[in-house]
Image 1 (cartoon, rainbow, N blue to C red):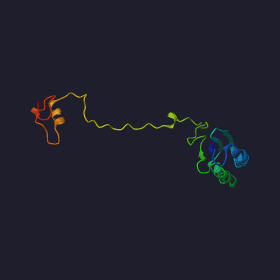
Image 2 (image 1 turned 45 degrees about the vertical axis):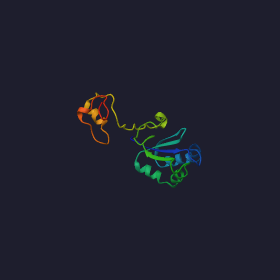
Image 3 (image 1 turned 120 degrees about the horizontal axis):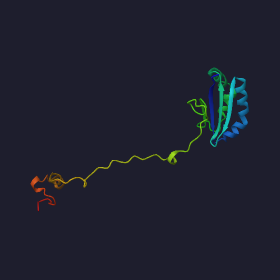
Length: 159
C-alpha cells in the first residue's frame, strides 16, 4: 500500500508554545484524521516546536481532512500564525523522505563569508624592473621623460 504522508510543523511563538497547542488540540486533530481515512500518524516533539505527520491513502483524503473547520481553526490557533506554521507533503520535509527532518546547527554560527575586495596595485615591487617602467613612474604631470633619461635611480631632470 502506497501512503501519502503530510507534515504539519508548528513552531513556538509569541502566543505560547507549540507543545501547549498540541496538548489542547492534538487529540481533536488526531481523531479527525482517523475518521477521515488516516492510516498512520505520529507526533514528534522538538526543542523548536512539534511535528504532526499523517499518512493518507489518497491526496483526496488529505484534502478532505485539511478542509475540515476543526483543522482550519486549529491551524489558525498556532502560537505564531505568521511564521510558525508549515504544512507540506512528505515526512518532515517536502522531499518525501521516510524519516522526520531534524534541525541542524548553523555552520559557522550563522556567519557568512565576506567577499574580499579587489586591491588596485599602484606599484608592483615583485615584477622585474625595466627602464621603460621607471620612465612611466617618473613621468609627472608635466609629461613623460625620454627613454634615455629613465635610468634606474634617476629622478626628474636626470642625474
